[in-house]
Length: 189
Length: 250
Image (cartoon, rainbow over all chains, first blue to last red; front, side):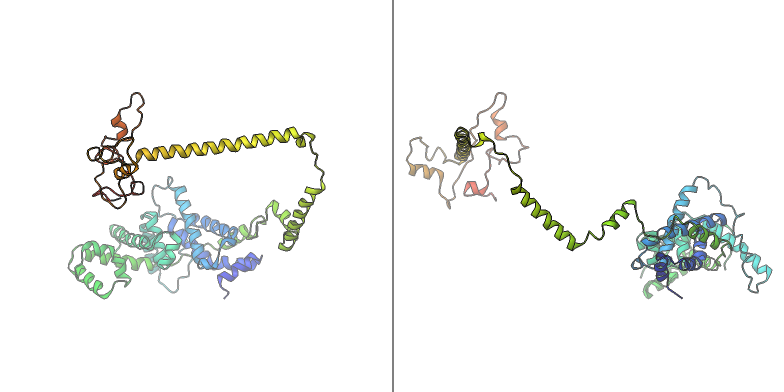
């Protein structure tokens, strides 16, 4: 499989197939980052398109010496999520569970029983709801670390804050989420 | 190793991720096992992480990838192409010309042309420039100018010398009263010779007071003065004084 940096070079030379490959590789990751932060499927879809549009326009500014393409893509996504949050701050009053997890049923079951699927969906919805109760800076830190699996150095580069701040936000976010889940009556795993 | 609740809270993630050293980990566990606040916190956060990391990735909508590709590849106006501004075309046209070899030759040619034009183009001489009368006036003007500048320079030196002579400290009046007609030897004794410590008193500068100004203001008896010593005179730097006053570091 061709590395991302090489695909980027091909894109810059006009290779559309390289760009298609990049989109296919990273759409899922970008969509999940957007969804976990916004909690809305439609917003996550629009934001994902915006991310790739911006990446396509500014692809020449990516330098492989700055880090992995995936990290750069995560940073672009994060910046757009910040813009989104500021844009929608006034409209956001309550977090609704109606728009939560509309595509869980489309995922292959993998042999799980319907009861387990329902429990999984309900628990997932509660965890997502707890995530939405965090402040944006704690939320994005927890998403990047515990859901996207980024290292501290990568998160530091994405969020453009010192590593100490990254660790502090992750720690506080986890403690806050634990409190919220307890208040929601979510039991031990 | 002592461990507090605050440390437990701050280092909780480090403990869960195995980032504490063995001593710190033991201290953390010992505290958590005996603390009514920290033990529940540890358990709750641990369970939360299990839930959180158990979240599965969500499948994006099937049409999302197509939508992204249509919005990027489908728009010919955007794309990861190199930017060529309107002036870029002109730069491209000049590119064969903008080479180091060509630039060097062009510079040399322009310089040569400028030198040739200096001599080739005839200059109109005015008749009055070379007339004896004009020459005489010009020389006279220059001479007076030089004389005036020299005289000003000498006058400035004289003023500086007068100021320096007035500021030079003199011998105390009780020991050797200074006389305007004193011999040079007496004067030199009054002034003191380098290398000898003498009880010198700093005297006021004899300045003519303007109306409304008091001597105290000039002498700087006010406590706010930074340049005057305690006796009220002007303290001179060592190079003018020749010898610092006793007990005074300059």
